[in-house]
Amino acid sequence: MSIFKKITILFLISFSLMVVIGYQMDKINTSRVEALITQKYLQDAKEIFLLLATSTPNKIEKNVQNLNLSKSDMSLDDSMEVILKRAHSFGELQILKSTDSKYLLFIRYMDESIMLIDKQLQKSFQEQWLLNILVFFDIVVLIAIFFIILKILSPLKDLISKMQNFTQGKHPSRVEVKSDDEIGNVATTYNTMAQNIESLITSREEFLRDISHELKTPISKGMFAVETLDDSDSKEIIQKSFTELERLSAELLEIEKLHAVDDIKKDVFKAETLILEALSRLILEDESIINIEIKDDFLIEGDMNYLSLALKNLIDNAIKYTTEYPVHVIAGGDVITVKNRGERLTHDISYYLEAFTQEENSRASKGYGLGLNIVKKIIDKHQMVLTYEYLDNYHLFSLRFKVCK
Figure 1 (cartoon, rainbow, N blue to C red):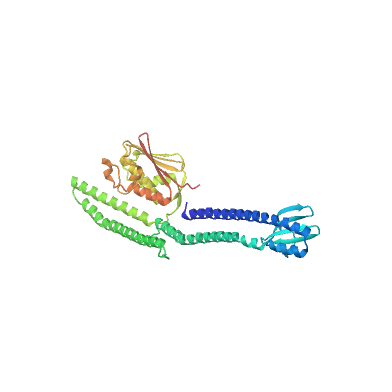
Figure 2: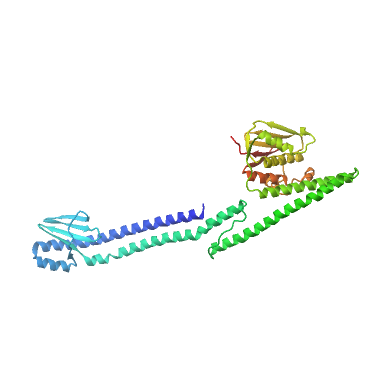
């Protein structure tokens, strides 16, 4: 879960909690106010009913003032909320709440009616509105803090995007530094790191290209010169050395090409065609050491050149390490499997996918541990899957392809 989702969830939880707390506080305070006002107005109503029954209008008005009540010019209507309604022998009393939250006492005695309000008591309950306002502003501040945090963290999205581009081979990806806070420091650090890595990659690429190119000429000259020598053990050793140098140079150059290629060419071809192309890359003195079994000649979408190189490397490794011929190449479903008999590997398969790693075997001296590394790079470029199993003393390397239907 991203940090933005976490912050949003925390905000929603806090916001919901504040709204619930505010609502409950308002509800409790309103109930408390209404209970106190109801108690006060009921006591006042008793005296007012008595005054209406025994006193003159002037005396009634004076005594009403003594009760801290005053006449209201508001009239009874349906928009008012009825808090309490109680019948009297010669009339009724109602405690009402107006649309502007004023609490009123309505008394009807025989043919007379009077609407009263206790303004002093009304003022004493204004503090509940202050509390509600504080809760409201607290919610507003919470919302403001949420958007401020999102704005502060927004550069992280750009930073993540640039870092993803960098990992995909777009090495010039840099972040624009817009602040001098911690996020700005992270962006600056990333830019510096990316620049250093890009420089190292460029230097390595140039080195591999140069060394592969420069080796070709002396190797070719050396191999030509060796042919002029008389046959001897020394000539064979020198020929073998030059052959190995040429092979190493070719593999290093192939790895460099894989690093340089961003987009692979996509063609459609049959599994059998790919197997035959891979075998043509091998120099086999005896073709009987390989058994080909085509269970399903499915269509493959990808770069024929690179995929045939990957399959060729798997077959070549199987030939080197097998303890019993033939080596089996099996196609079926969406998988081509290279199968050979041999002893269990001493390391996990991930170890052999790294460059310059190989099994400690006397026959492995013919290689430099680059074959499987090239296979891995090709498969990664195609976004395909390479799997390995060891079953019944057999090594099974399987390439799962993108099938074109």
